[in-house]
Image (cartoon, rainbow, N blue to C red):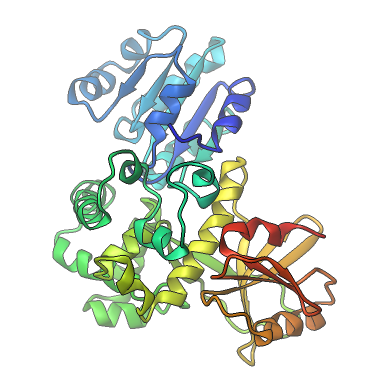
Length: 386
């Protein structure tokens, strides 16, 4: 089993919270991770119809079967349990784990019944950091972007071309129908592919709605569905103005580039090398790596982008307590001094003295007078102040 970096945080939080909630996309290894940590607690999946029926018809009686605690998977299927869980953890010294793959449904119930009582964590697919040093460590960024990070691909050695169409179809048939009653699933499937074609672009609701043949309000609702079920996420523009910021709309990215590659019709890695979205997919991959590092530490994402009135753009801006870290992302292996031009512009405008970094498609880390080139495997070095 490949060690998940989130495991340390889960172990630490068990001692501090009566309830722990773990969400994330389907098949990211939530069950495997929780079973490996909570060997002393029974595991119950509420996708099982018998378990779900018992929990819905007699919540108090169902929970009484687990006096020492329990791991409840896909718990968003039984919202009746949440208020009873609140009563139990308030009265008894036990630990209950909640797991689910639908962020909106789970978060809504937690906020209503378990606010202040639960630690909330997210598990995304494998990061390059997690695969580093294992037999699955990617040799090229193209291979990782095409394969994606879903554990089953590596555990069962399934080809991406076989895994992702089935994964996407299951997601559409199961999660989409549960979150929102979408009658025309064919139109939704087409909409999902259109989203993949807009990776790294500023979101234009009118444009994507027009191309999909739906209303802007429907497009907004469908984007919410995709976000709630961990298919897409949005990179917000940084809020600080500097008297130059123009854009207010977010950029669209996928939580896993393997899903995006499948939706784009890519069947092998060689097709990726010449694809028009090669740069966007690399950018998506690197941004995801920074988000995963933050989430695996049990913290919220702190990533943004920045665009000025004269179209000077910073691909990634990481906000920390006392500093902003600007990062440019370039898929090519050839280094070019022009990669630093927007970073230098931002540095002058912001007055920040932070070192400038370009994460690129090469392997070498090189320091220059303009800033640092950081290879794709070592992107975390962009966070260093050295």
